[in-house]
Image (cartoon, rainbow, N blue to C red; front, side):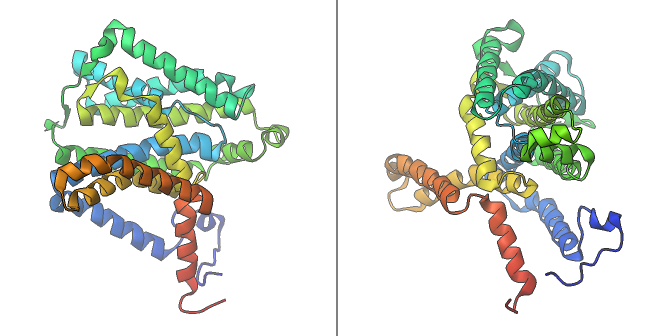
Length: 345
């Protein structure tokens, strides 16, 4: 048992950060995020922005799949809805940056609610198939509607915020990171509320939740809507970051990527979504850097590229076999060890 964590009120027990140690770690992480862009190269700034976008989308999927128990393979389609909304608003009307992001999230939320309608009747693999069907429908619309630019897609002008043009990774970093942090705090606070607890009850036993008075359809649609909103905002950030949106930007493989991220990181955990997205984004890049350091240079990298992909796949399988609860559980185990260190139980 941890020492010095006595709670004397309900508010203290429900606090998001319940110890000085957590607050110190949070302050350290904030300081690191502030200093990072001044120390990192353009390549690492690019990766940091990409990681944050993936963290935001993975957190949204974790709300739906990890906390509510509804399997979805349509996260990439909802990101596409947000990205195309942002691209159209920015390119044709030049509306403000923050307005575009909110609009992209809201459009994706509406799409998620529509896709979530079958969730009252089907679940598990059947629901996953329904979300895959929605993903293919979204891809067809992106590729064939005139205002989406067809197969050529849309070019996205650089965002502007307070008169500053966000046309570099350094400038976008100061927008993408705060938005991601706000979304993470929102998700963490969600599960301290009645709505978040209703999601967990539905995940654990939906029939019992309904008996307790939780309207299943309302909360399942709400979970789909929140998850899709996160995906839409992440898709809008993606559009501003890459400056071009095409139907091929959001394939089914991207949805599998996010599902794998929350499985590897740990479903039903905000930290799990963060760790999983970081792992899935950074490990292939680190393996690529490792191959480039080997003697032989780029010629050897061509032959070892399939091996790198196999190693990445084996790492994911290893987590599923040896640590089903993901990276978040490994972190909790490490924390428990140091709570009592150097003593032993």
